[in-house]
Length: 353
View 1 (cartoon, rainbow, N blue to C red):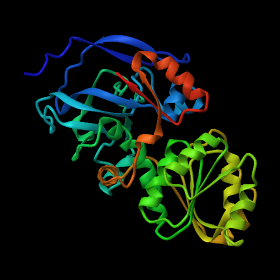
View 2: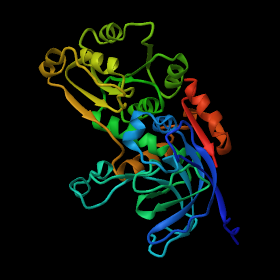
View 3: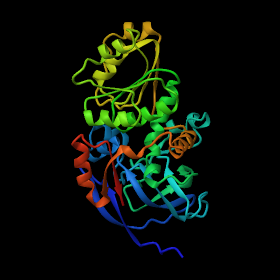
View 4: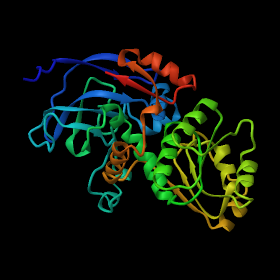
């Protein structure tokens, strides 16, 4: 017989614009309608959680106070509302882009960029998030795991999905690919690119530890752009043709401006990183228009195609997400977790509620 559910739970909350979150003891919520109550096993921290913690200008665009942070999580269904489509005991993770199902985008298979999108862990049409011992999620936003991958692996399906969407859109088979930025998304994109048949994957960053992890995760070539001229490196590597595929994961205006000069004519680029400042393209006529480039952007995943692809990549062993997790903390030590993230040495930190 299952243990009875507690009456109270602990959760992180953002209740004001000041830096940090608060650890609160709350009443256990009750699922209604199609909702499910999830016992959260693992939550991983993302770059957007840093914005929410600091409450910077990006946070003011993407979130609404009050809310519980954490949008990359996995757990077990422990209670269901009367019209829920999941059952108690199912192992799940959360599609954090809460789509309406009625807008143009949703009707054309683009639920991940729904016009009326809410967002789990951001206070958009839900106050709930994964940094909590228990969480409420409408069942249509739950992805039920089909294999026995671990909860740690499952919580990383969300960022892996972003990387997969980016690399899939680039059509990388038999192509050389440049990954700019070796944070979590860039490193996962490295593994996905190799799994989807890329020729050489070149990774660049300014932190040697991240580059070494990228190498471990499948990079063929790594280059520290703080002590090497990246454009010269790429041109030498490609016999002055330029690279044919770029996945930009930093959002840095300097990198975005310079990357077009490294692209081959007819090349493809996908932008994933969030720019924190306006981007100025210095030579747009020469480096973009005259090259007949294909420029794409990615926000989220294809629901639920990407989830299924990513789970099978992990289950089959084609992508190993575990080395990405460099730090683990109990949820009560969240301040130490963010301090470690701010140090720049952490690639992916997880909290265990």
